[in-house]
Image 1 (tube, rainbow, N blue to C red):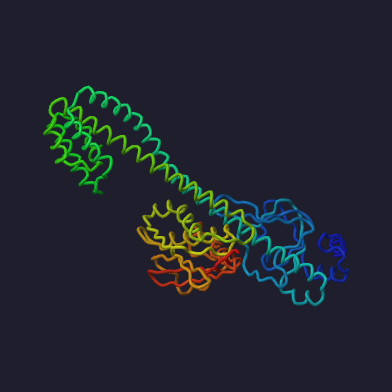
Image 2: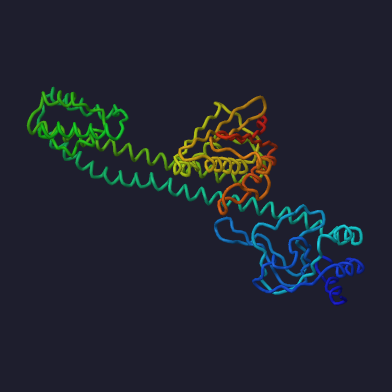
Length: 464
């Protein structure tokens, strides 16, 4: 006993504590040896006791889906485990593992009432440890959840960027071939020496595909249209391979008949070739533009998302942009489940006073959860409206709803209704923390077929 008391007297956390208090600890505790690789939970009553580390090193490793990583560590001179006044009632998430051999004095929590009375100096010091530990875990949880969310967004974003990038590359390659065909057909048409009336008719046919898009058709109707145009081209000496390009336009059999009444033979073939080449190149150019616009939109959303995360103090935040960007970055996940996301934001929505990065994290968590909650081909509505000096954001899904027996627990740390490995139980707890940090409020209402998360924030004061 005297040896353990002497070691406690040199303990980094307990140095200077009256000897009588150290003797009390030794009299009411047990010394345990820890071997490398051993799990702390294997010690008797490990999660019901306070551990005063005399030597060695161990840490908590947590796996949120990307492999275990260290979130907190202790070595000789530290105190951990259950502490007086702590509300910890369950084993911590993750594994507490011994990295280096050592020993610890373990005091069971049943002795805490007496310890508070008999060891006031020790109690004061461990309470400070408990406060620091809670602050560290909160910070670590937020960072872990943020990195997990960013990982999900990055995976979806890579796929979302790949689609338009591939489309742009494919269309650009075809466009180069199409331009060569357009040049060749232009030279051939010039050599045909058309009359002014014939030239006007050819120009009119080409302008139809340049200015008037074809009506949206289902696959069967589109195939029928292509077949009809291909048959017409074949019957008039044209190239049936031009049918798909012409079918994408508003060109009709009647307009082609009008052209055929003024042109025939090789002249008609040359004119049709020129019209088809023009329609094809314009269609490909439009595809490149759409793909580039989609890439620009995604990159812009990511840049704004990342920029807002740099803010450390409240500012006037564009809530409409924050919500739109969050939805944009989650479209890939929604599309995989054929989930429709409807965004309804009140025009001229005022800015709110908040930390932009906090709001991004809140919307990401809530919309991501809503997508998870609905069935295939389900529906999610994201809306925002202002009333007096408050802005209310509603995220509604048509999923099965939150069971009544767990509704009061969904904001509890580490509580999750998702299958093992699918949820950390941090998302809603952190969302509530972030909303409250921004002087807001978050509520939930749920019944089968409709769950609504409602976040209320204050309008930013007008700048003078």
